[in-house]
Image 1 (cartoon, rainbow, N blue to C red):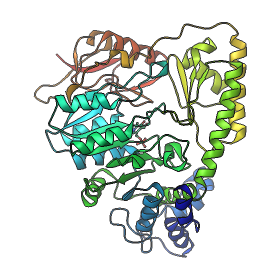
Image 2 (image 1 turned 90 degrees about the vertical axis):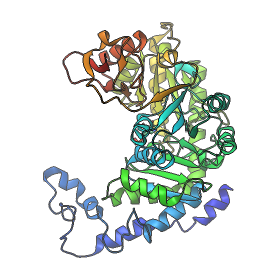
Image 3 (image 1 turned 180 degrees about the vertical axis):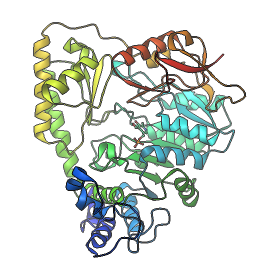
Image 4 (image 1 turned 135 degrees about the horizontal axis):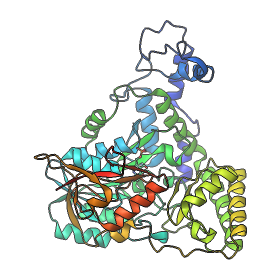
Length: 487
Ligand SMILES: Cc1ncc(COP(=O)(O)O)c(C=O)c1O
């Protein structure tokens, strides 16, 4: 299957890049946007680096097609992407998975509809429900190592569907931020049995379809809509993403209409061309590049396990965890995750993806060199050696899943508008109903949703995060940490 797919792409065609390079060579007077006029008006130091790129920063000029009504280079590139990932139809996105999730929910839900949503959904999913004026039937994920949110078992979704028979879509986050995948084939079967679409937020899994040792992707499982951030796990520019459609339950035109609503009318061709070239590379060499990277990471993880047992959870081939995500137990280094992150950054120049109380998360990609892997391994080995026997007791959870209900609960993402919410200090808001979510970023998962009561656990956790310099969205603009809530 992988070889067949690669054969289709041997000429490594990149229609958007080709059109864009032809366009950049044209001698012209630019009396069209953007305002930097092919780079000639870029200011100061920025210009020195960016002039060549700026010639490629084009708009929908003749020969360059149109993202919102593609007929030429963009259509060809999207068709090549559909073949590479194995979907019925693929859209290129320039607004990240955020735009994909918003459009997916708006295209499948009508006001008052209900969707099964995992409690650890990214804020873009909650925003999509709010825009769609839909309700969430919230299901709790399993707790994974280090207390992070894991997979949602299909049986839990089946129970929610039985309890809430009006549900008209299922949302799954797979893989999670920490790389844990759900049992997608069983969840897709549930969707089919109930004739409702399954939407997979696969923001962290654009690479999964390209190597047999990686967990199954939503596209391979036949999910109706799969949203992927190309920029997270592939060598593609920030904001690039893909939305794949399968099975015909959700119409192409309806999806295109909603993508036009949530995305800019001036998409960047640099982003589109970056998507095009990442697709060409994956389709032609992806299996080889990914295979080699899996080997490098597995060998490094084995070596670390021999010197510092249990320090790194690196997944394993065939397991329900992406081997490109490593969770490092900071407790085994005698530090909090925040301290470990700082030590790695300040002493070794290693910048991690995310830190929390008891762990640090690394997001690798096949673009990481052997040198990168060696540098990270060496830094971890050094920190483990310095720590010696000084272990701190690992907290059992990172607090969030423990505070979540085990039963499916109905949450209305709409905010009440009849009265204005109060703004009160965080610790005084315990026991009050929240008017806005509180969302630590990363990972962008709300720890309390609008309509939910603020618990002492979540309040303490947010205060600890603020103490450590973590950004928490949704706080009121005031000197002491305050929130918006209902009386
Ligand atoms: C699970 C999940 N979904 C969606 C998103 C949004 O992705 P993007 O940044 O591409 O808009 C994120 C971002 O962190 C995410 O973690």
